[in-house]
Amino acid sequence: MYDRLALTPDPLLLAAIRAVARSDDADATLDELLEITLRTTGADRAAAYLWDGERGGLAVAAARGYDDGALPGLEAAAAGEDNPVQLAAQERIQASGETGEDGRSTTAWPVVIGREGIEEPVGALAIEADAAPAPDVAERVAALADLIAVVVDRARLATNAAERIDWAERVANSDMLTGLANARTMLRVMELELARAARQGAEITFALFDVDGLTGINDSDGRATGDDVLREVAAVVGESVRAVDTVARWGGDEFLVVAPGAKGTTVAERIVNAVAARAAATKRRITVSAGIARFPTDGSTPEELVEAAESALHAAQAAGPGTFAEAARNGGNGTGSGVGSGAAGV
Image (cartoon, rainbow, N blue to C red; front, top):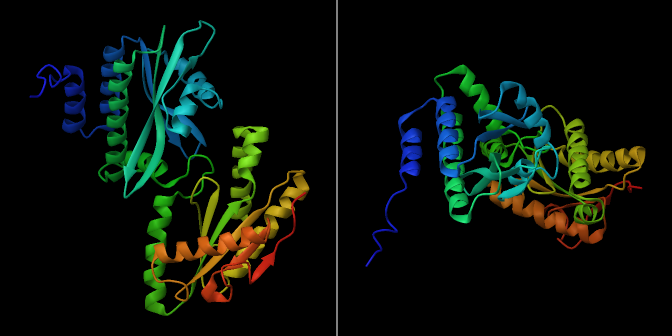
């Protein structure tokens, strides 16, 4: 038989669920969820942070227990790579640590939206208290962080308020680290571009780029340096594409470019060489490898074309860093044939 005591509902979590279900005012709901967080933990300060693409960092979306003048300091502190809020938002883990001169503990939980098989971290829920919460309390706060994700996701879909639409767009379309389009946005672009190309009988190039040796950079120089490399590569890729091309951060160290027309290989080669040239100018040892696939030769769906580009990328990486390869049906054979070499990094 079920343990009736184990099934007894938590009144605060019930209140949180009702708050989310019965209100379409995102700001008011976030404020109520923070109040419930304080009552759940016994903490006296709580804040919800969301990624702000325009500002390029985490911004306080709602706070309880803080003076208004403290909020800029919270956002500045959250930018630190070892800050619990930053760790929770970036690594999707619960993180705790002492912050401030009073030695109090800050504990943060990730706010993650899951849709269509893609998990997207969009911020963090944090509390400040004399000590980190007990495991059972932490589990309840993690559930509150999930409810905040529901509020954020629902706000994305709202169309009845211009201000909310603007907020939703910033959260929905941008990659947190690089400011490029995210995978969700790129999937929509791919579907639209493939439908257009099929109607017009046109070509599209899918070029998948991987930063060579990023794991080694993270291990030797730290994750902050690795993040700097990703931002630098993202800037070069963005500067090198045409106005008709779309570029997105596709994975941890991967970037995807969708280039309409027959000039996609030229665009990919330009990016490989531009990254190497930037590396030479800045004294960083950075190169990217690229795999190239084309519609309709290498596939007719986003999945088929990305898979073909990945196979070509593996061929390029096998040939050495700073190279590019075309998919097997495009003249390569998946083993390095048809590989072009970009300038080497220094």
